[in-house]
Image 1 (cartoon, one colour):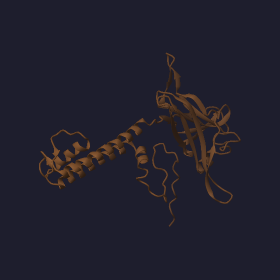
Image 2: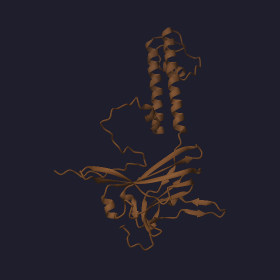
Image 3: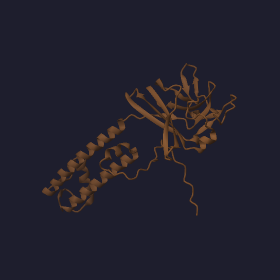
Image 4: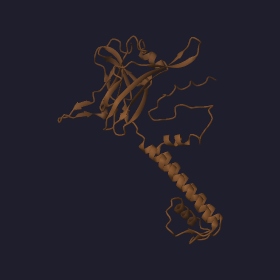
Length: 303
C-alpha cells in the first residue's frame, strides 16, 4: 500500500503566528523560561493564567483555613464561602474587617498568604507592564507579490504600508530568497540568498512602500519560470525594521511569500490619491488588489 504524499512545507514566517517549527530532542525548561513564555503569550492566554492562579490560590488557602477548625472570627464554622472570601481579602490586602484571624494557626496562614499575594501581584504587574509597553509594528504586507516589468526590467515586487498614523523613521527592508538545494555530496540544504533591491531604506515610512527587486543576470531568480518556481521549494522572506517615533524604540515586522502567492504578469492597483485640500489618501480597501499587466511583455511567465 503506497503512502500518501507529504504536504508541502509551511511558511517559515507565518503571518498568523502559528507554530510552524516543531523542536524535538531539546531539554524542556518550562520554569527556567517561564517569563519569556508568558511575555510572548497572547493577552487572552495571559489573563486566563492569572485568573486561574487567583482562583486556585484562594481555594487552597480557604481549604487550609478550614483545616485548622474555627480559626476565623465572625465566620461561620466550616463555611468554605467565608474562608474563601477571607482569603480574597488577605491575598489582595483589602482588609474590610468583617473577618479576622483569631488563632496562631490562622495568623501564620495570613502571613504566608500576604507574602504570596505581594509576590504574585508584583510579578503580574511587572509582566503586564512589560507586555503592555513593548512596542509592536503595525505593518501590513500585500497578500501576494508580483513579477512584472519595472522600467523595462522584469522585477519582483511586493507592497507594504504602516497602518498606524504615526511615522516610522529610518526604516530598512531586507528581502531574501530561501530555496532547497543539493550539495555536491548529495546533502539537502536550505540556502538563503539576499535579493538586491532598488531601495533598501527610507527616512520616513508613513505611506505605502513598494519593494522592488530587479531580476537581472545576477539575481537568484534569473532564469526561473512560473512552473519551475511552483515546483521548487522556494520562499521569499521580507523583513522591515525602523524606529517608532512614539516609543523611540526599534520595531520589526516580517512576512513571506510562497510560489503560489507570487502572481506573474500583474501589477498592484494604485491606492494613492490626493484630496482636494492637498492631503494624501491611502485606500487600504484595495491594498491587496492586482490587475493584469497591460504593457506588452513577451517573457510573461518566464525570465
